[in-house]
Length: 551
Image (cartoon, rainbow, N blue to C red; front, side, top):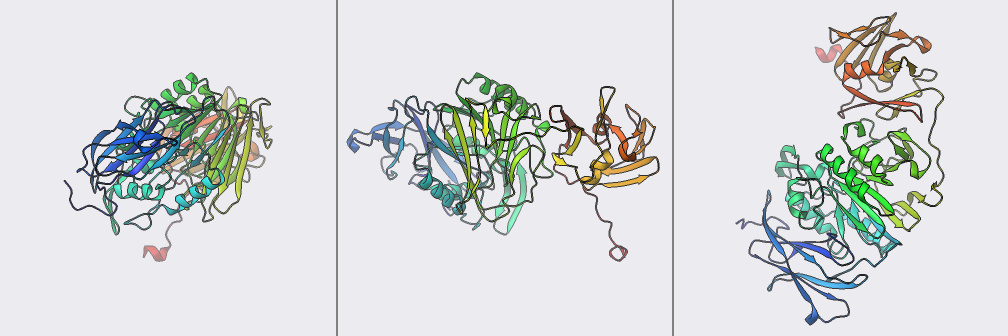
């Protein structure tokens, strides 16, 4: 047993106490906590607020051993059952010698139709290194709960910690959530940082960064706390639950095919008024280099067929809200598609310069030093989502009106006369003014050199030919030829290249896809063709070093 406990390491007194929904929230609640290994069992003692301590009911915990990179612990989870709806309960956790202070929660009322819950995202924090405080998200939630004290639960959209396989980070998160996670259910989605770890994780030495195919530490910590109704092998990272008239499907960031297939069945089977989903990665990103839904397996299909009202996402530390989208087409009415909603970061940790993409009605880059959360207000016919900043400003508010099949404020998705072109959702309007994709013989042809110039790739235009250097593949196209030169080797095309708008050379979208391993989708309603690449590599060409630098 590890006797050299780290800072905030496990002890005989319970810590990391977490309330969660793991069943019918009207009659049950889960509570989990951590101790050191000297404590071999535990239980929760629960009573109604109007009862005396002597009337408390004991619920035994399932206890599991866990070894992290810096500690050895026991994790305990008790499932509280047989509760009465709409009732305030008081509880403690621990064993006969070491018990927590009293905390409380309220069960879901019967036939609940009007209520609110909170959403946070990307609250990972690393300062100070040895004892991260997660103060930004704590301050943000204090503000949110003052504004909405009756919030029923908190949903996190992933990147809960900076390195999920390093226990120091979880110690920091639970330190920041102390006093909150014990009194209101906290439902966590996984993000890429929750999958991540360092084999050596020290303040001035971080080596061996790795990402897992399963979020192992997350899966262990919350296996008993969250519903185990996800796809086989990924149950803890993928789960769903109901609260009132809402069904919420939480998707993990691994195994997109399995996750998407499960999510489609899960959403389709629900008969709740509102169907909401949460996935750390945006299906439609605002990072200029972000990878989109064409590479997320069956997940976009799950949203379309399952008819999710909103897909909540994080990851990009900026805010954006889309038009309703189905099958990559943008619409006006909520019944016609899913609103994709990227919540800005909740940890005062902006890190990137993002951009509004073609899919989004509203966008806020969040490059100011602030934090953001969302409040969701639910009624039988109207669902309102408001994004608040920690300085009191409102970043966005919109309402889905089910009866009128409208979104307020009103929006109208773009529909173009000519076929416009985008790359990862980035518009090419300035470079492509008056130059559009063509439709001929059942194919789409694109002046791809114009797109490549727009995204910063090297393009050399000469009479009758164009050379495009993109993602390390240099390809020469010649007017009238059905053969290209790809990295010096002949490459057969399915259609000959021809001169089109303003003399630009046009290449079929299928041939472009084959040359650079791209994917493309055509949104017929909006008349937009979008190309995407499976990696977040930057496509810009590099400035050659000067002669002085080469000397």
